[in-house]
Image (cartoon, rainbow, N blue to C red):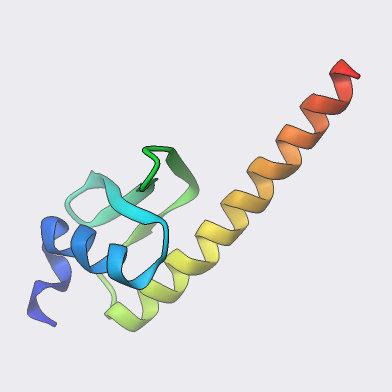
Length: 85
């Protein structure tokens, strides 16, 4: 658990936890601002996640924020698509 603050280790660790996730994008050494997929897509979280708390806390926040961000991005895409049809 001592490595849980190391950005390089975290990227590898997270890829094992979340299918399709390849890496993380950091705003600072303690703030995750986004992630990359195995197909090289980049997702910027609506709200960055601090890793200064316990791993259990920020992992849950990261998972929740990924879902919220994807939901938001999908809704925006649907609305934009509707404008063109």
